[in-house]
Each structure stands twice: as C-alpha cells, then as structure tokens.
Length: 344
Image (cartoon, rainbow, N blue to C red; front, side, top):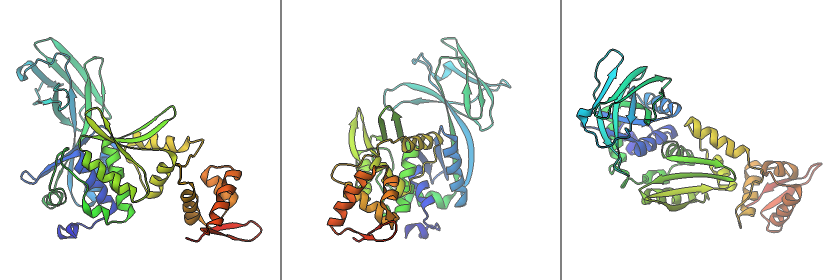
C-alpha cells in the first residue's frame, strides 16, 4: 500500500492523524514543515503524541489573533511589544467570510505578558497568558490558539501522496478508507469531529454537526457512515453545508463503531449526551434490526438483561422478542433464566 511505500505502517492512530491534518493542517514539502492549530490543548497534545510516535519532530508555540474594533487600519498603525520592550513581527489576516481583519502573531509556548498597541485610534491592550488562556480587561476580542509545527520530509511526502488535492473546497475522503476495517473509519471520523465538528447539547437538542464549504467531502462521509447503518444528512447552513447526525440509535452506533473524541470539551459534551438519554428512542422501521443487533453482539442474553441494555421496559422488550422469534431471527435457550441468541 501507499503507506508502506513511504515507510509508514497504517494504524488507526495514523488514520486519525491524516484526517486531522487534512481538515485543519497546512504543510509544504518545499520548506519541509507543516502546521496545525487549535484552541484545545488536549487535542493538540494528542496530535503531538501521534506525530512523535511516527518519528516526526514537533515544536509548540502560541498563536494570538486580535480583532480591533476599528477595521480601517494599516500595518504601520500597529505595535506588539513584549515585557522587555521588544517589538514583535505580525501579519494581518483577512476573514474569508466577512472580510474583517485580525492581527496575527506567534509567541513562545511559555509566553506570559504582552502589550498590544493600535496607534492611530489610541488603543492599548495589556494581556497576560496563563496555561494557554488569555487574561485581559479589554473589550477587544483576543483569541489564543496552540500551534504545532512539525518537520519530516518523508511524512510530508506521504501527506502529499495521500492528499494530492488540498483546500477546503476540493478535498475528498481517501478511497482506501472505504476498504479498511471499522477501527480506521472511527478514528478518521473522530478526528473530523475533533477538528471541525460541533457537539450540541441544550434542552432536548442533541446532535453532531460538521460545517464546511465542501459538500462533496461531507457527502463522502455520509455514504461511508451509511455502510455502518449510521444515518446522517447533509443540509445547508447559510453559506456552509452541514453533516448532521442526531438521535440515540445513531449515537449508539457511533459508540459501537468506536468513536473516541480527544477534544476535551467535545468529549465531555459527548459523555453528557450519552448519559442523559431518558428515552433511548429507536428510529422508525428499524426496531427489529436494533434489537437483533444487540442480541447478536451480547448474546446469549436474557430478557431482563436486554431490557437493561436498551433502556426499554420489559413489556416493550417482550414485544420485539416475540416478533424476532416469529421471523426465526433468534431462538431461545431454555433454562432457569431463558436466554436468547441470534440466528441470522
């Protein structure tokens, strides 16, 4: 396979790393460096660990973005000064969505105290950094990211080979992922949600949503997930497209697929969603498949055990067990406590 040709052994962890870098990273073989940024430290530390496992050198730094209220500024209007009085280099970043401008600059990973000056409008902001968090009394928005830079020619060439077409509008799901076992699919999907997805849980609303400009890439994921009987839909959300998964049954299938989120906040929300379902509703017309899959995975299993596992009442469980027996999809092992096993 392509992975081995470039000196790398395919693993679920490498599948996670490839998908994370595809959707949120940048690299260039010409300058032999790559970079990925995220606000969540736990996620960046995990990606750093994966890179080190495949022998890739890394370096962490902080990326600061400041969005001044006065937008009609030029580079000469700005100063970034550290606590020793040294001026720092910066860039002006333009938003692809609304054209707004941010001041963007890098700091050492253990940086602590800095001053931002916007000369023409007499804006001066002092801010401190502790544990990769910004502390300031200013109303001007300041965003902090952890930036992870990595260096290894062979690995960068592997990225070029596996992802020949880059960019938010053009990337697609790699065809090899369709042929690999579910552990690789779950790892890659976990990376997608960690880097680009949102897990929403408020009131009765529970959903995973990935918003992107690339509809084809989201449709690739929809088709791949459907092979594991996980229902999702691609819908329009303003100028973006969204891949949406909702409902207990599909969340349960994601758990069984093996999703494991490394973004600390998303992982916490995911755990809260799974633990707060009072009614573990099954999608319409799929109840028999749902119960038979549980029996297939956990059998032999008693009626009481199945009711506890599915979160359903004994009456509802009995109803579907009777239907499954009539269709010869399960059979009963008689004993002091009858148990059910899957037939087909």
